[in-house]
Image (cartoon, rainbow, N blue to C red):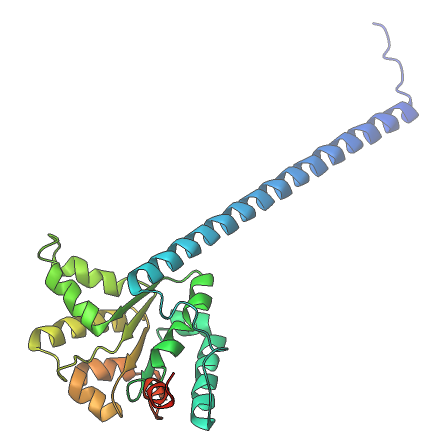
Length: 251
């Protein structure tokens, strides 16, 4: 039997170094590949988020109209201490916006007509959409019209109701009818929507043309108002009508 020649220790060390270097290069290449893939995935998510936000923003203003499109806290005229206090309260809600939405914290802007409540409401939308939350904005009049037209559109009441239950935020401008009180049917549908959102911890942001909570309960019903006010941030907008002041000054 021919004896096996001895292995040169220096040769073995060189081979081991080469293997270590190759393994290191493979590892670095793999890490680069993973990093590039993660960067691509992050970019795709960011682009998808931007597209979703743009689509939701366009749909919101198409459905509601352009009047309040450029409303912001910056261009809300705080001509006195009451307006400045209300403006600060809305800003505080926005400061904890994600937690407030996820915890179902309602927001109530209550006071006489023409005081800028819908301006303040609309001023909250851009930041909400940018965070990825969905918004359904409707007026009380449009809400009841939507239920009336459901029959003509071959949609069930439950399908229409779901439109107002599923969004992350329901913005409801003045649910109080012009006549001053809800019909039994309207009261039942509003309670169904409010109760479902209450149970799922999905906030309602509402503007109400009433002087106080008692008048609000009288117009909307005690059960509805009890759920809306539970844990809510309630902000009183008690000053003169901005629209009336414009008429007086001739603007």
